[in-house]
Each structure stands twice: as C-alpha cells, then as structure tokens.
Amino acid sequence: MKFPILSPYIFWEYRGIIRIFKKVMKEKKTGLRINNPLISVIIPAYNASKYVEKAVRSIMEQTYKNLEILIANDCSTDNTIEILELLSKEDSRIKIVNNDQNLKIVKTLNKLIGIATGKYIARMDADDISLPNRIEKQVLFLEKNPEYAMCGTNAWHINDNGNIIGKTDLPLTPEKNKYFLKYYSTFYHPTIMIRSEVYKNNLYSEDYLYAEDYELWCRLIFKNDIKCSNLKEKLFKYRISASQTCNLHSNEQSVVINKIFHRYNIVSQRMLVHHENIFIVDGCYNKNEINYVKELLGELDSEKLIYSYLPYTKLFLHIIKKYPKIKIFSFLLTKSFIKTFLFYIYKKICLRVSLLKAN
Image (tube, rainbow, N blue to C red):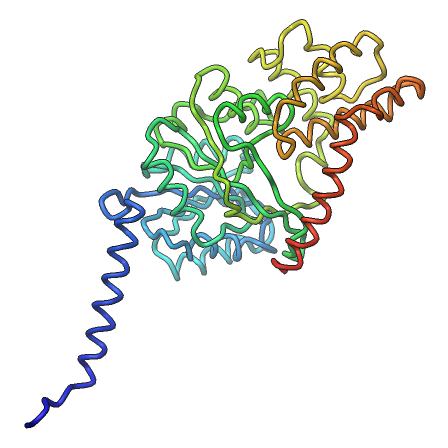
C-alpha cells in the first residue's frame, strides 16, 4: 500500500487555516468582525521631538487597525515635524496638520475634532504611550454599550526615562465618576475615547484654559447627563514631568476650577466655600468648616477606599497643615485617618511589587 506524498506546502496551508480560525473566533468573541468602525486618533504636538516617535508608534502598532491618525504640529521649533513626516511615509493612516500659527492646546484640539471622520475619536498626547490593545478594548466597550458616550482607561505613571513609577485606580461607573469629580479629575485626558457626534457638539472652551478637560467632563456629566466610564485595565502609560500644566500653572488652574464649580453646581452652595478652601485653594483654618469636614468624613467612609483615598489625603493634609494642634489630634484618632494611613502603607507595598513586575 502506497501512502500519498504530502507536499510541505500543505502544512503551511493548515497553519493559515488555523490562523484564520483563531482570528474568526477572536472577532466572534469581541464582536468586532461585524462592527469595525473607523477611529480617529487626535494628537496635538508642540516641541515634542523627545517622545513623539514612541507616542505615535504606540498608535501605529495598535491591535485595532481601522484608524486615521491626525497629528497637529502646532508651530514646533524643534524637529518634531521632521519626525512626523518620516512616520507618515511609513504609515498612510497618518495625516499631519500644520498650524499656520501657534494655536495652543484648546484651538488645536478643536481643529482636530472638526477634521476627524471616525465614528469615535480617541485622544492621545505626544509624550505618552498607548498599550497595544488600548483602542481595541475601548471600541469594544463603546460598541457593546451604546448608552455610554465616553470611556477612559486606567494607566501606569512613567517618568522622563519611561520607567514605571506609579499607577491609577480611577472610578469605573458613571455614578462614581460623577461623585468623585468634585474631588479630582476622574478621567486621564489622553486616555479617553468619545463618540464623534458628542465630541463635535461639545468642543473645548477657551474660557477654561489650564482645566479645559475637567470643564468638558463636568459639562458632559453634570449639565448634559451623559454616561461616561473608565475601563479597569491599565491600557496607557502616562508621563509625569515637571512641565505639566498642574505644575507650571497650578494657581491659574485653581482659579479656573473654582469657576467650573460655580458654573455646574458640583457642590451645594451651602458647602461650596468650605469645599473650595480645602480641595482647591488649600486655604487657612476656618472654624466654621469643622461640621463640613465631619459630614465629609461620613460620606467618604461609605465609599471604597481605593477611590476615596485621594480626597482623604487632601483633607488630612489640609487639617495637619492648617488646623490648631488641639484640633488636629481629634481628627488623627478617627477611624478615617487610621484606615487612610494604613491604606497608604498598603499602596506603597503594592506599588513596589507592581514596579518589580512591570520593570
């Protein structure tokens, strides 16, 4: 009995069939085979030559491929444009927009939003890094949850050298994001993806420079009652540097945030002056805020510590720095302070373990 001679090409064909089968199963699982919408990724760039190549490549190398990558060169004086032109020759999805004059961040972002043609628009900064499946995960979430207009992701913090130095634990649900927005910005701006029609109808406002992103979140959530969420996974590397807005323009940012609080009634008028004193300007001790602090501790005690840790920390630092010593001790002995302190130690240990694994 003669056995048929098997051509080596058959094995390559079988490998191809298996690869196609795996791809179909993945698409069936994620639901992205039927819905493969175009995603516009918008990236403003100004004197970003140090990091822009890595940032843009992190988008070019996304597992989700149906992208238009819109990059605005805002009159850079370094070699940012040369780097962008080289990248655009590698990838036809890249479109460079050269501003005739330095428009700054708000006008540049609004310009890119106007140009974008995708079903969803994803933000990206020229010095950060998107992990390979970031876009895919966000598209999947928004396609499966049409009632949501926007989603961000959790992130790793990196330093100037790209080493991981921290991580985020942002609120996930619309309800928790709405609650904690009065304490901190619950969305990392360059991680967000928004439905195009919502973004185009809600452009950034120049009246809130240095906090334009925070104003947009508050407008969407408090004024327009739009559902926004964060994905639990860390799909982003967010660079921490001395040149960030919160470091260079902290005083101006506080003034703008105060303006936002008044416009959108984020905190009740009865408590607004105390809230501003503690969380926005870190003002002097005011004996009239004691009752507010006690009420606040009661509220925060009912929330998950992973989310309330930041407001707890700001609150206790304010008390320690501004309150008379006799008043400080009464707060340091509370259950709230003790659990915050213990959680601080726990976070430090967990971060150390995470850094050892990540780096």
